[in-house]
Image (spheres, rainbow, N blue to C red):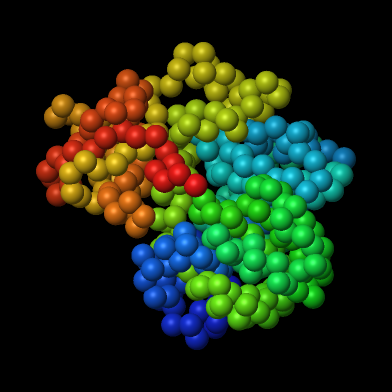
Length: 362
């Protein structure tokens, strides 16, 4: 049985197309993917991302647990700061990617992907057996709205006295927002645009969504769904768990060495990652753009000089560039910028080129 977020009836009233996603009935689109995508790039969009998971880790050994289960160095965090990280398994793969928030001394929040809530929770519990931090799953009681785009700050500012311009990327402020106590506003996002993610109790979310919609109308903000969220993140080269990274892919293969801090001490998989860094990985995740007309899709084969060398992990038409773009794992020797590859579309090779991500500059 699929779950519904607190905003389910609001999405119905707005005429959203609702689909099952990660165990929830979620809005994939309201008007159209391209229109919603361009609204976020040019003005603002509002997303319901209440399906995400939120875990509180606290106590004197909270940091010890986080350091063990994530690749980044959480000891560098301070009050009001967040960081992106991977949760590695013991085989050098990725259980999930996540964001870690330093709430206060000895208290953190981890935000996990919706499809991995149970999996991540079980992994944290397993790793906590000999540590003894306090773990609390607040996913069921927490709603999450994201307002994203060049006009996002002006819109969200209308509902808080706190000066949002003080928050650079990956910072947050906890306080009363739109009359909702203990809310948290974070500048974490998944679109490449200025984004405010608003965590609040379920009972506050419908009123807050409606207030934001009312304010946002004059700024050109529209409700936006999972369809455009996917193309927005792809244009930025942001990874989607289950497509671009999974239990078998290494953070170093995925280009996530920048959040894999091998000098912080031992953590799950660290020995494997040190070996991979010393010997170099055999494959790498690359971005590519189509040279010939064609739309790359997930699982399409990648060929080089007539030989199959990999598969597309994510692909689509870029609404901004109006060309096919995608990501794929290829042998390391083919990961050099400018390398020409073929994407097998309907069993025919269609020319593409390895390029630097993000695909668009922000």
